[in-house]
Image 1 (cartoon, rainbow, N blue to C red):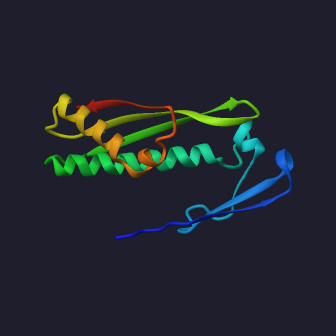
Image 2: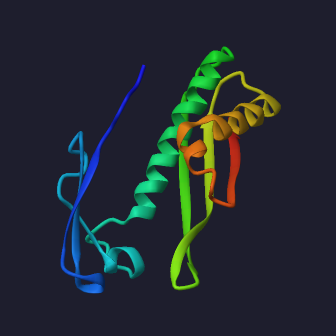
Length: 146
């Protein structure tokens, strides 16, 4: 099975003064604004590539973890994941050098060792993690809730 999803960007203007609009195939984002201010400053009227990347990574990992639990015979009750994506200056440009995944999950009957193993496997196996293999540091902190 091959699945393709699309997103598009329309940009007007140059550099710091330019403004873009992001649209996804599902219209979850429809002409959603982004620009220099929402990426490099504290303008919260738009989004930026790093938070979209973080959302994609957290969503993919969370689903992979839930499926891994199910395959091991456990049902996830609640799973919350936060992804923190760090963009740093790199010469004349920028690079993403770190992504921190923070997982909190309630999975009845699951012991700590199995939980950590399933979480680590989900991190390694989710398609977005694989796609981001060039990021030097992708870490996971996983907390099993009672």
